[in-house]
Image (tube, rainbow, N blue to C red; front, side, top):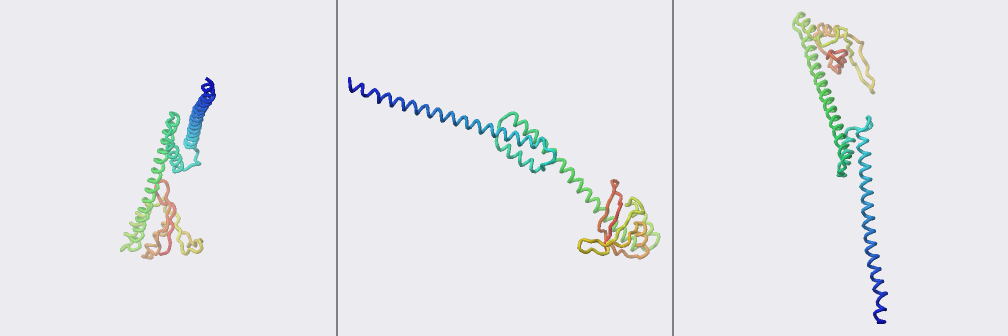
Length: 211
């Protein structure tokens, strides 16, 4: 009987240790769940901030920066209805900006081609007027060339030298005077350096440079 009684405290101790171990295990699991929940909440909040920055941006971010931030947020793989809705809104904004960028790019490209086309036409007229076999033919080409300009009095600037970023121009003239000069001199010694057009595609300023 005495031997049995002596074993009782030992059994109680074992039971207490087992109970404590199980309790500690449950506490660790609870702590891990709470930590995971807190980390998830932080990710949701960060995603919300990222997407809000994209949606409410007023020109402080480039489209590339917005897209990079959106991709970073989507990589979080959050399945929250609010976040998914904000992602769709951000995607629409970026898509709209990309479409506008493409429209402007095409417009700029078309404008550049138009200028190149005008330059080619004008250069052809210069050569035809300078090499005209008759005065009548030269006058005909002058009349056609003037249709490219907003006015016969459109200014013509001729660059005679450039040094250290400083441009030296010859005495200013007008397109009508310059075309008649080509007719009289029967040679074209200047190349087209630059030209400016109005909204109707008419030349409003011409810049030439000596060949």
